[in-house]
Image (cartoon, rainbow, N blue to C red; front, side, top):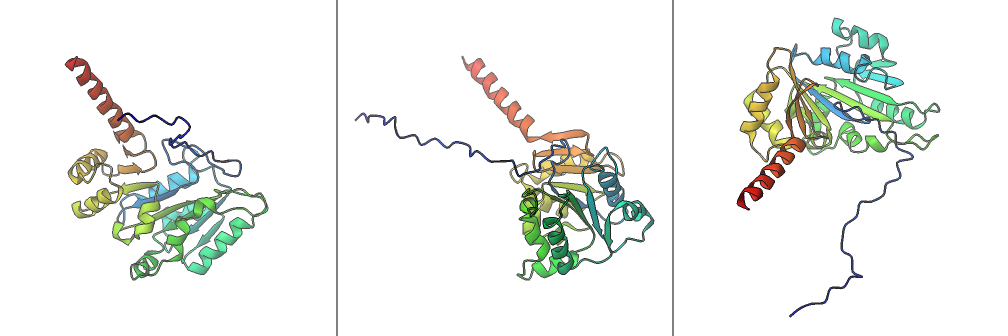
Length: 265
C-alpha cells in the first residue's frame, strides 16, 4: 500500500543559530582555540615545564593572548619557573578551593573585561584523589563551566582558559578527562597508561595498538611530545607535524568507497 507523503511534516534536524555576540572565541589552529582547557602530562624532567613556558610566554603560542595570567604551583622557586613567576600577574604556591573561588569572582567582576589564563602546575593531585571518593571537587566543577563564566560588566563569556600539568593520567577525574580539549604527553609513559589515554579519547574505536604505534611516531627525539587535539581529532608530533587526522582519514575512506563504486561499474 502506497502512503502519501505529507510534505508539510518536515522532520529534518537543522543547526541551531547561536548568538555569538557575547562569546570571545579566538582561532589558534593548530593550537587549541581560545577559550580552552589543556592538560600537559609527564613525569619529572620530561619537558613539561619547558613546554609550559613556551605556551604561556612566547608570542608564537599564547604569550600575547591573555591580559591576566595566574600561576598556581608548589615549585615556584625552581629555576625553570623563574620566567613565569616574573611575567605572570598573580602567583600562588598552594592550591585551595577558596582561592579558586576568588579567581572566578575576580574574572566575573573585572571592570576591564580582561581575558584570563589560569595555570595549575602539579598543584591539585590531592583534590583529584578526594574526588575519587565520590566528592566532586571545585576544579572538576570549574572545567564543566569555564567557557560560560561571564563578566558581569560586559556580559561576555569565554573569559577563562586553563592549563593543567600533572605527572599521572590516573590523577585526572572522569570529568576533567572528558572536558580536556587537548592533551600534551611529554616523555615516556607505560603502555598501560597510554592504553588508558587511548580508551579515554577513543580516536580509533578502542584500537589501543594503533594509538601506541602513532604515539611512538611522535617520540622520535627525547624531548618530542605527542599533542592530542581532541577538538579537531588530530595527533601531532609536537605542534607542527600531523601523524593522524580523523578528517583526513574520513576523506580517504570516502575516496576509497567512490573508487570501489567506479570499479564495480
